[in-house]
Length: 274
Ligand SMILES: Nc1ncnc2c1ncn2[C@@H]1O[C@H](COP(=O)(O)OP(=O)(O)O)[C@@H](O)[C@H]1O
Ligand SMILES: [Mg+2]
Image (tube, rainbow, N blue to C red; front, top):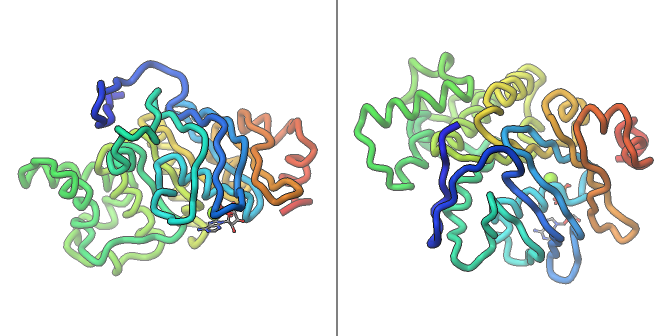
């Protein structure tokens, strides 16, 4: 994998070999006074797909948004504890949240293409980042991202068509292409297939498996089968008595699904909770 750097005011950090790319320490988030998640300690392994599962409202999206400072954009949200990206505290005052979100990209529940052409959607991040690319280089980058997102063959003859002319599944793959175009290191996906049909869902799961060697992928899903199919590691969250989301179990996906240690995980994956 190519060395990747995060743009911060201090020493650029180079990719090490192996180990965790993101480490979360004693993380808690509250909205106003009410804690949504607490005491989260978790590492996300490089070039692996980690699924975050758990019933609705247990704080999966809240946790995911901490990982690239998307919670900064929610006025009431207060983040406590630490999130390290390759050893950098991403909440440090010297770190630019926009740079964080470039290196740690995000794909949302509903496809949210911009009201512009297919090509311009993918080129968007490259232009915003002020990358000096000539026309050919830009075309290459856009093509690469569309290939990785398994969309190229379907759109190569109509790159100038509006993104909205695509089907829902294609739009979501376009959003993945848009995230990939800026060459991120980590990709966060929040229930990316929840609005899609089974065939579109399968395409996205397949493409995640194809690209996972080059990226670290973290996917929130409440679809247990999806977690089992697509992920290497699984983190299970559950609300406690006060409805505060807790991490109750984490491990290789195979173990979580065949031999869960926590009774609540067993009940959840067998469909008795949530
Ligand atoms: N912007 C917000 N303002 C206030 N409370 C919120 C906000 N977003 C989420 N919450 C609350 O935080 C808890 C966790 O929500 P969320 O992270 O969306 O859970 P999940 O993604 O697992 O469904 C819920 O109780 C939810 O109501
Ligand atoms: Mg959610």
